[in-house]
Image (cartoon, rainbow, N blue to C red; front, side, top):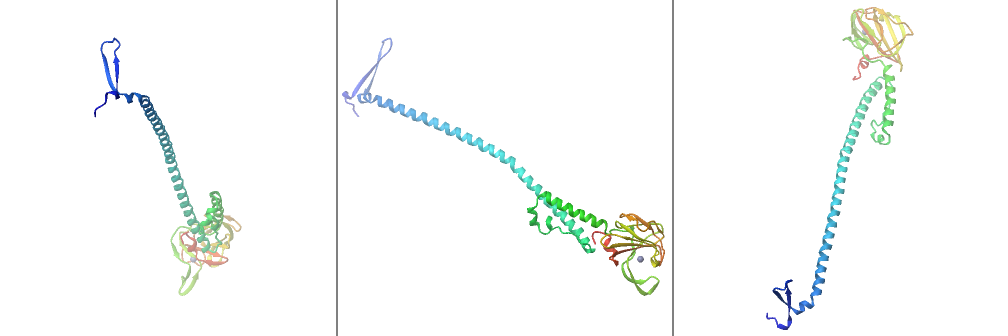
Length: 288
Ligand SMILES: [Zn+2]
């Protein structure tokens, strides 16, 4: 496109030493619009600077948020294992409580089977575990302690274990009469194998109620325990306790012999509940 001469202005550039000039021809309307161009340029620069400023600000803000998130992550990482550990501890404590409860139940069953009152584990959980939630740990442990005290007292005065550790030669119940095999007789206790002089031990805490000759039992010791229990040790060669003496479980009551109605040296052992002989086998171990 051809430019008309009147539309063109000439700009002459003079060098400092005035040697040689340079001329630039520009459209006249461009010169008239020069200030607008300058304003546009300033506007564009302002826009760019503003944008850079905003971008920088937003980058800084993001960096701050990132740091904050990182800090939170670190914090959460620290918390998670603690929470898990706590839960694991609670789970294992719960399993110990259950194990304790099952053992208590076993002892309780033992006591009940032997005609004792036993105890209730209801308030410490037992069968109704929902009640556990309402009690604090301390209350639960205190309740267990109370029950265990009760158990210890019950067990200490309940015949348990062997008056002497040896095999049984005759059990509780009807058997043929050792003196007349054609005749049946009721054997109210169990016989333990033994040699003359072997120690016969008391099987529970109690008090001696008889110590001396007792017909067919020969030299015999009877010990009264609480809850209506009594134990009897017969055919002794020697008695080492006296009536009224307090005995602890395991104490010596006398020595094995063959006095009274006996066919050989052995220890005759009876457990009586409210005066009636019961099967002593039930009182030998916790697992019966
Ligand atoms: Zn016997």
